[in-house]
Amino acid sequence: FRIVLAEPFDRTGVEKLRTVGDIVALEACDESTLRRAVLDCDALLVRTRTTVTRAVIESATRLRVIGRGGVGLENIDVDAARERGIAVVYTPHASTDAVADLTVGMMIALQRNISGCDAMVRKGHFWEARGGSCSREMSELTLGIVGMGRIGRAVARRCRNGFGMTVLYNDIVSPGWLDFVATPVTKDQLYAHADVVTLHVPLTDSTRYLIDAAALSGFKKEAILINTSRGGVVNSLALADALTAGTLAGAALDVFDPEPLPADHPLMRAPNTLFTPHIGSRSVAGLARMN
Ligand code: NAD
Image: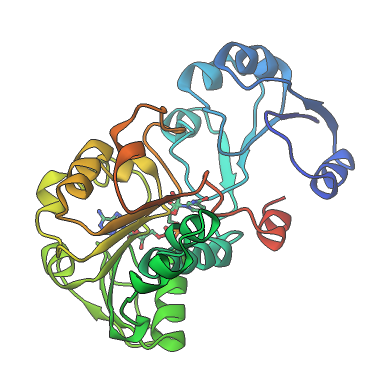
């Protein structure tokens, strides 16, 4: 059994794999490298950076399974795999808590302008930073969750039960019974009432650019947007425009479109932003579960 690792996995995971087959660890994960590597392999393991295209899948002669360490499957041509009877497996529960923690951290950091205050303190503007700082408490805010799946629910639970926030949500399917108080609303109602809008949908044809100029025009002026889902869910040029025009108070992003964002992208100059480099799932426990 020959297993190709397109990206690094930690030692514990790799040792388990060694008990069932030979490991081939690739130095690169571009399409031509992958096409050569899958020629004679039984299993292909990827994470976030590898794209498994139809051409890669069709180059394989005996591939039986593609494993994805992570949640989103938009980097794998699942239809092409299905047509050839190749199983695609992933780790949907591994990073739920890690992403929910980061989302809550971003919410508070943006609401209290923690990184802006930090920069001013370091520049010697201690008292100006203090005088200019006065924000609302979490319990006063309404949270709007788009996508009440695993991560959406974990964020809602923390924010409702931990901070006493009012929680609204929108999903295309009913999440069933929830162990916290939350109200289902339409997307337009959510945008109109939420002080914090947080996105937890997968990137699909129906969610690409879900948050565009039209959606943003329905947000409250004092609202903040948090995106720890996928960069393509938000039209980043429309977001930069809304922040620059002051029709949106701030945005915290862990994911970008494109990723990474070029240095001259308008979002890089937009005010009241907080960026992290796609670290949502990168907790010790989360990565261990993923591995
Ligand atoms: P999930 O499948 O449990 O939940 C997604 C929810 O979105 C589902 O309830 C689904 O019905 C809903 N949904 C789909 N389309 C929708 C639409 N158009 N409008 C409203 N709701 C819609 O997935 P999850 O585990 O909660 O993860 C969500 C996403 O988070 C993943 O798909 C992945 O892209 C992203 N993610 C990011 C990181 C990171 O490192 N930042 C880590 C893990 C996951």
